[in-house]
Image (cartoon, rainbow, N blue to C red; front, side):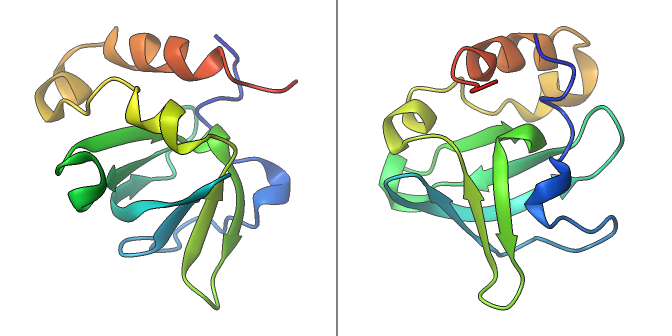
Length: 117
């Protein structure tokens, strides 16, 4: 797994401490939902996206390294994944997220397969 997957790209426009909750999330082929929760902790930064009716209420965990750009004026976050890649991602598990140290590795392994280096 890439070491940079769990950190925001320097070119993303992310500012530490910025509240992204409620921002719309845009895949490469359209909107997928809104940011429900996020973290900018070094080495474990992520977004939890509520996909709403698009994937029948499924929440997904997106590593911060998937974020390509943050538009603070329009309150939108752009990621370098397609809707299908996000739809097929492991469902966010609130219990494993904090209790299982291997959970981030499992989720990261899924997304790392799509990374453009």
